[in-house]
Length: 273
Image 1 (cartoon, helix red, strand yellow):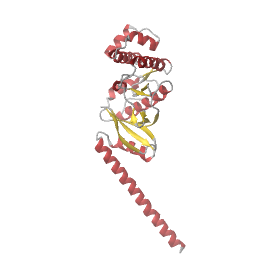
Image 2 (image 1 turned 135 degrees about the horizontal axis):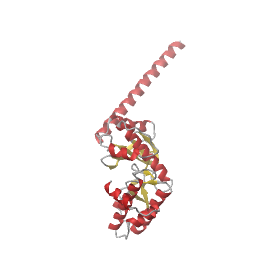
Image 3 (image 1 turned 45 degrees about the horizontal axis):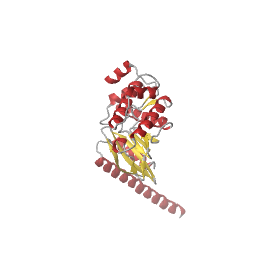
């Protein structure tokens, strides 16, 4: 009798397990189809990486698109009461030749140029490390984890509303100019890092302070392109604040940030980059 009962229990457990597995498969299929409909440029592997974040309970749900560009889409995601930004690089449209130039000279990476998947994985790893490094010195979102071409980080927001970009909001431009100038100096001299693509498009405004995002192009100070990229960052920032009526000189700005005079040869090289 006991053996019969045990066999019945085993049978029921197996049936329940099959039903549970079926529900997981159905949930997975539904999720992949919904996200593919919403953003059909994602390949199957990318969709599975996102799905695995949900299964592993790193996030509970994805609620919408915060920003969409040629190379990446940023989704809003949440876990309980916490809000996150989920940045997903589009494998099909990324500029791998440009990515390779930034990775190749970085002493933190020793990647042989091979598959595009390896390059983009290194690219996301670089952004993750840059955010960690920069975050010790200036305001940045905190990176949480990375999965190949997917990066999860804190969302910079106010009551659930993503923080606006500097280009989209009125601020005390004189005050912000001085704060950004000081932050760039700290980033270069203390963190030994150059943002690499700094402009009013990737500086957020939160609690009346600048918050810096999009560090994928960031390079360490010893990178062969660091001065070129710093000059470009400085000129971008100066041009923005000039349009807002702030008296600024990019050569003086560069000297303040780097502690060095702007060499003519470096400026010429920056023009051709």
